[in-house]
Image (cartoon, rainbow, N blue to C red; front, side, top):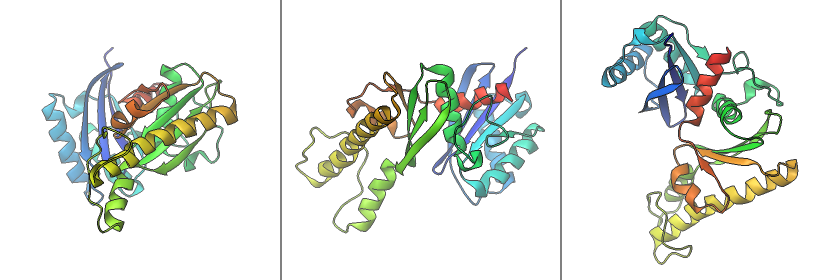
Length: 257
């Protein structure tokens, strides 16, 4: 039996859509997180994306959503129900698969963090640390038994860049590009060094501290999120890049629900 699943990860900057046919990812699409769109507007946009990839809303057997932007969650849910005729599953206290979470209340944990942890348990040797570099930089900890034990949260790479340009009159906005060396010879290179190499050093230092504190020797380290591709090559630790980790976690949660 062919099952089509729509996964939706609603983040602060982007909404990421993934369509699965059984366990195979057919396509990934992204749209800007527009906080003032109505459910009809979201429905129209979803239908446009489906048409682009030659699928129909009626093809989907179900939808699973992770959301960290509560003000638009209801609109997305109504949009999905309108075009598919089915009530979506939303990740949270009621729906997090057969996954043990050692942090209470579960409702206080970001749905994207739960999805990433579920995928890490399903795909990689444990214990596992997941570095999610999006609007915020998070490091999620899954212990040897496959339990979510907590995470760290710090300002994201792009937030740091934007804040620097906004608060310092003489510092420009720059692209997230790896500079030639740690010591820059012009303002742009200096900022890029501080942000790119600084974030990489933070990830190396923080993952090492977590592994030491929790005795997670030989932990697998995985990275995902929009900014990770440019940062991970600058890290000293061995880190696996997994672009669609959160979407894969949503798939696992749906199968266990």
